[in-house]
Length: 98
Image (tube, rainbow, N blue to C red; front, top):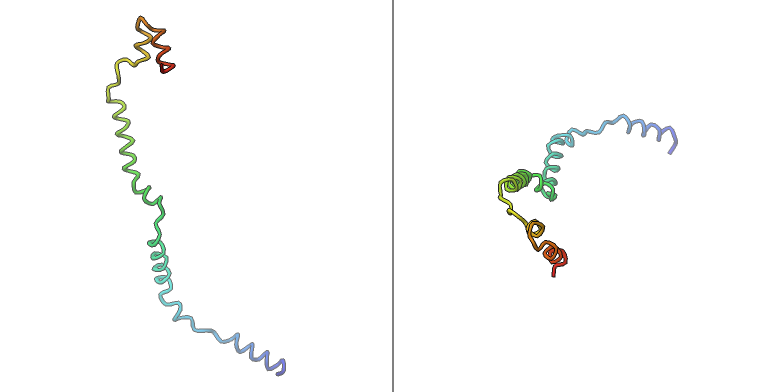
């Protein structure tokens, strides 16, 4: 085959435009449907954490309110040991655990 004939065939092949209308039809819809299907298959653990943020915030608020409202002990063991007459002996027992 001579080069002129080959060049003519290549030129003819370059001028022919393929019909891509069939593949273009509904491309965006198909792509979005596939992405949505892949996204729905796998839900990472942190998506549940984001949904539970209001519950976590309510727990923190309740703990803060409980800390402010709940009555504390009037005197702890160490306070009574310091204020009492037998202070040194009670402190030694308290700190050593004997």
